[in-house]
Amino acid sequence: MKVVAAFVCGIVFAAGLALSGMLQPAKVLGFLDVFGRWDPSLAFVMGPAVGIYLALWRWRRGRPSPWGSPVPAESHCELDGRLFAGAAIFGLGWGLTGICPGPALVNLVAPNGYFLAFMVAQLVGVALSFAVPKAASGLKP
Image 1: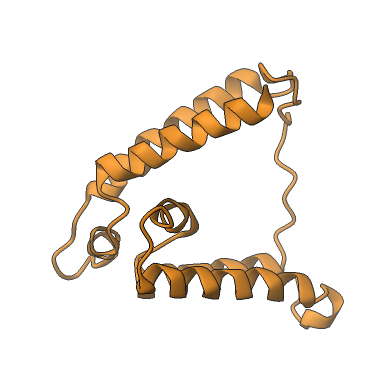
Image 2 (image 1 turned 90 degrees about the horizontal axis):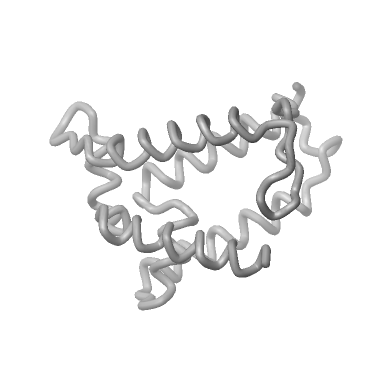
C-alpha cells in the first residue's frame, strides 16, 4: 500500500510540475532573477505546497500516518557544516541550471542532453556525499 501511495503522490507531483511550468529551467531561473525580469510563479507553486504540508504535519504529528508510519512530533535535524555546504552546493546548481531533482526526474521521461548532464552531475554529487565521511570533511558544526 505504501508503494502505491508513493507512486500516486509522485504522479500528482509530476503533473503539478508540468501544469505549473516548473519543468522549464527558464521559468525557475526567472524566479531567481529578482533584479531582472522576475517571474513570481514559483512562489505560487511553493507557497501553497509548504502551507498545506505544514498544516497536515501539525495535524498528524506524534500520531501514525494513514499508512502506519509515525509522523515525528518534533524535527530532529542537526545543523552542521555538512548541511550548510550541501545546501550551498544545491543552491548554486539550482541557480546555474534552473533544475532541481524533482523536475529532473520528471524530465527523464523525454530526456535531452541538458537534463542527462544534470542527472550525471546529481549522481556524482550523491556519490561524493557518501564518499566523504563526516570527520574527513573538515566542516565544523
